[in-house]
Amino acid sequence: MLWFSVWTVLVLATLVGAFFLGRRLWRSAKALMAQAGATSQVLGELSAKMAELEAAAGPARTFRPDLVATEEQRETWRSRRAENLATRRGRVHERRSRTLARWRSIGMPF
Image (cartoon, rainbow, N blue to C red):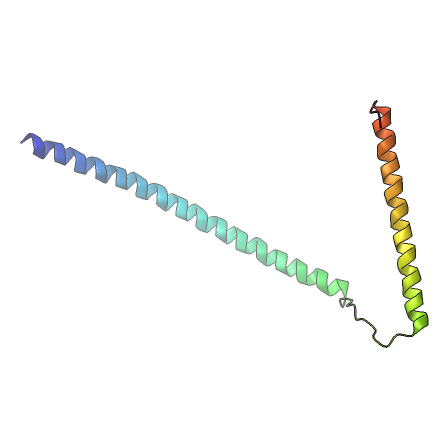
């Protein structure tokens, strides 16, 4: 008789635990579906906004190498590239100089 009551209590406790677990899973699933609905709405608005921005941007510029370019065109490109690199080197030098000055202002021995 004692074993019957022990097993009855164990089975009832398991059923109660399963009920609470199932209820929690159900509520979590409902919250997940609500969030998924809100996310899909936001993604729809985002895709519409992206399409609007792409239309406003116009056609994309693509780079095509010119295999039959003349030597003067190539020289123009080389000089433009050299100017860009020189400008970049100047910006890097200025940034590093400012950093060094800032370090020296706080007492670093550099």
